[in-house]
Length: 185
Image (cartoon, rainbow, N blue to C red; front, side, top):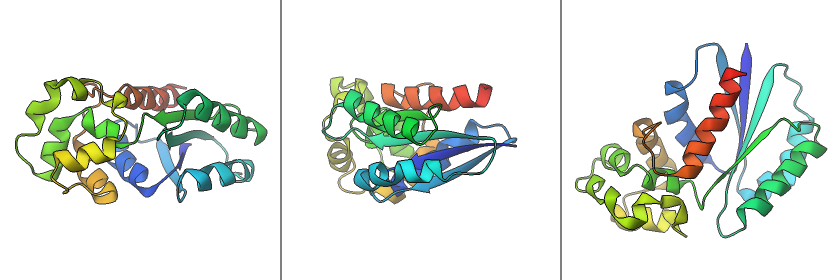
């Protein structure tokens, strides 16, 4: 049986994946999560964790928020750590700017997941058509939901409703593409 191992910056990413992956994965693929306590913890310990991984038939996806950093620089650094750990085939995905961009790319999922009204219709506003360009998606999501959104419980509530094809976040689509490439391999 094949296993996909996700190395994640934070618990909210695990909750997001828990809502998305069951709709994507065939039954013969297992999922494991290694959740770090922030981006510094991820970058500091990634090489050691990857190098020490001994379970056979595993593929790896490393996921981190861009935050205010340069996406290409962050991705290059993570790829280098994977290569140094002997896992050059690992896939690195960056959420532009934050995981919450995925949610802003599908306001119908936010409305349904959080039980709110009137949010979905804002999807056609210019800023929500390109959620990856919003500098602080978590702040925007808090404003949009009148402070109801919480990173972990909000991710748990919204993720099962995220559209897998219709999401406006390019970084979400790139993440799904990476997952699909491992499924098909």
